[in-house]
Image (cartoon, rainbow over all chains, first blue to last red; front, side, top):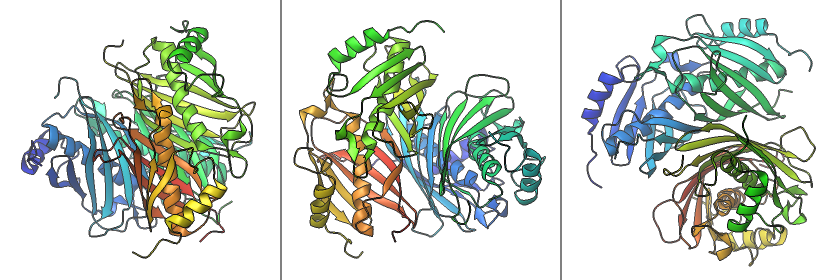
Length: 144
Length: 144
Length: 144
Length: 144
């Protein structure tokens, strides 16, 4: 596969500038890697994400499941921040422990108007999935 | 239908005590109403929820889609906070304007082990849906 | 609401001609009613739909969940048979008895490129849902 | 990984006996392989599966998406045919040509009460997915 249209460094710089509520040192979200058709995104563990019982809030996993494919689309297609999520389906498989979460997205369709991704979310360093999602994005018509 | 097992006031008091990261004056989430088999939950508009383009972040809608049925289950079954979300599927239908969001949940199945809900999310005062979700919850075996 | 763009009779005639594997007296599928934004579609009970345990196969319910919104879109938009399903999500809520199944579809979004529907499936004459689905359709660009 | 609890041959024999509307030479469904945690299931091409435009009906892909994980659960857990599907979510990614379809299921959770699977469906011999599904199953309480 070829190089991504936008590198990890370019994506971090532009997303931090235009999407600061998602990507800034306070939020704990960061990009581990990108490649054509995929991405790996991290949420640093924070006690604020904890729910009663010591597990991480579902909201954190849903945000990862939405953000990782968004990053993968930008890396693959180029800078089209107007891409919008139209559907997200997530299965919560086991309670994540108090540790970083890592989401790996894989684009399973990249059409002219729609992109579909599969996302596996794991506790950092673990093999088992804590959640699995599929997400769909509408790509603005001027793009591509 | 009979009265809910837990009233709006009891739910607010107990959830604020045990689930403060969700229900406290800062988060902007509150419960409008509960009844056996359903609930209506609100997210007060906050500029912090805005995404580029002036629309509200998907995360806010996903959190409502998860929280409203959780409240409906507690209102219907009684205090079983260990109920956990196993699946959430959400369609984002249109960009919500800068206004409160109101989610109405309806339990379409309440079994011994699983509850399934349908959730409609609207901008306050509007008829059209901005998002629609279905969510599934596992009910701990000791319960019911 | 205005009248549908295609009446029940026109839809039955055209779908039977062009989509005979779905709509012919042998399949047991028929249209009960259409209106702008919705439809009600029926599957006549047949012993061939039964699974071990006397319940109706999930395939029958998935076919209804896909077909009812398709009919609703045609009734609302006009004859655009090239509409294709891009996503279907279905919750099976209880085992349907040996009886006709009736699916009622409601379009919750009808955009230029995407339509999203909610579908409730019931045993004929019952109030409780046996299944609930949401489905998404891509509308060809020449249309509308 | 260890051997499956039920081999391909045992599964074919028992499913053909007890579930003949799914597995018999007429239906065109067959099992290619099973292993602990997964299965590969095939639908032989048949002109009867064709929709207008020369593509294969969505119903065929939904049936595969439901059946492949069912086979994987039986292969992994043993003979528990009472396993029932509670949820199925499928993305249709591209129109499959007139050829056999092969579905590969992978169990991403196998709990005491719930199993969750991911399913990729391809045209025989192709790399690209034509559809991708996630499915959830309730496991009867006596089992395991």
